[in-house]
Image (cartoon, rainbow, N blue to C red; front, side, top):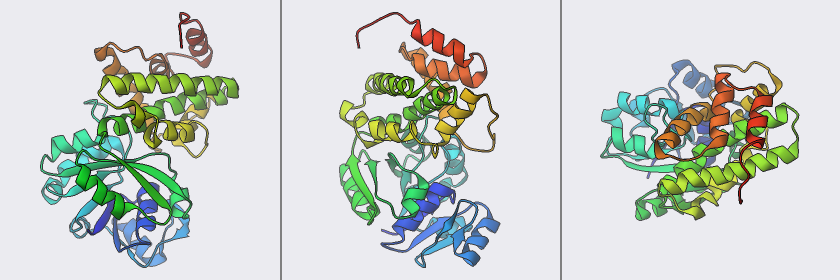
Length: 320
């Protein structure tokens, strides 16, 4: 099956670079100038300037050309996914669509596979998620991800096609667990960044990661996810990476909150919208999500780091 990657940000470009080691790949950029520059320079100077594009990788701004592929990887921000699908409904319906974004849609509380199914009911959807940084994938460093698809046969086919020399995929039919693991860990990454930015220490970060993982499980299991999915790459694995590296934009946002610094509003941080969507969803489900609520309070400016820390430490004592 032929492959196109829709979205020429850092992650989409990195995936295209890795996949082009095995077979020809088309990389679609919304910006015609960006596509032309990639064609001329042989690299994505704005996103991954030090990594050359393979000769098997074809950048384009022609959506119709990219949509000719049988498998389309959607490397667009979660909060823009629905718009892209709606704008290109005629060209995408009936295709195999692999979402490569993590998060929960703010207006609906839906994950990426659910959004695809709602907008394009005839499409065959899957999700690629897990602990990964674009720079690592693009440079050919070993990376393992989760491929989630309700159709077991399609999942196996995609696993074989999308695995490369440096990209190893594990498959699951638990799409709910994979969606929620990849989304909820971003909230905890913001909290961990805030802790380190405020100088509260590595012990506090370890506590947040652990209790955050419990919070992730609480929501995911209530939504029908399997516990083993949350213990895998899309949950625990991604949580470990994003809560401990400054390459994570969610962690960077948390650092800026903890330090009291400004943060570039043009940088997409999926965890901010996901935190607000998750808090609203948890309220309707009657779930106790104290860390998520704390992150929302910090994002909205309703809480200071000192107040947030005091509130969490003063919660009633309980069994682990």
